[in-house]
Length: 218
Image 1 (cartoon, rainbow, N blue to C red):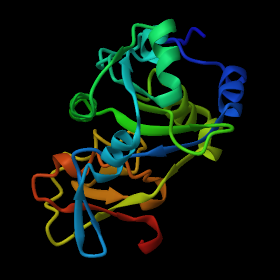
Image 2: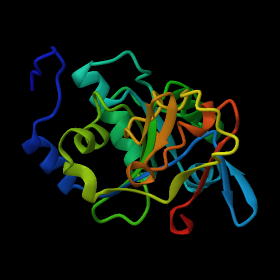
Image 3: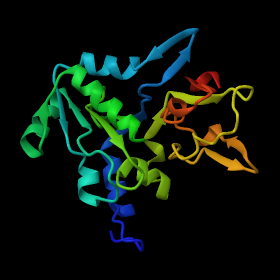
Image 4: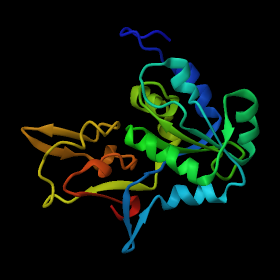
């Protein structure tokens, strides 16, 4: 699909077909402090997913390769267990260790990519861990452009701001791909209803004023 500014993206029809194969996509914060029940977790959820996997492979992101709308890192898509063989046979995938996979996620987090765990139809656990941008990737881009993937994209966490510590620097605003943060009259405005808990904002806050909390405690 050719866009007026020269970018390519999926059509609504293509996105609907892709969504039909996905049971759910859950955002996962990486390299971000998470407060829950007075405990602090760092990489815990995604590390558990990776350590529970028997095999892991990394490959170039198909969305970024196909659409080529940005210069974000491409070798950031992780396949787990049953998805590994397909990655090795049909892409440039290569098997890696858990530690290497965690390094991949840390690298892509620093680049501002949103991490999502995909559970496909007929499966009960994630088979893919993707690092997504809004300009190339079908689930994240589809949600922001058309709302098509809203029924499959979920999050367990949401950002919580400490207004006493926040100095309205605005460093978190460009990191928020879901447009939950903006500046108004030099003041930070945060809309938690738009937050999908990716944690990109929290990791760049110089005042440590943003924490990730379980969504049900919001």
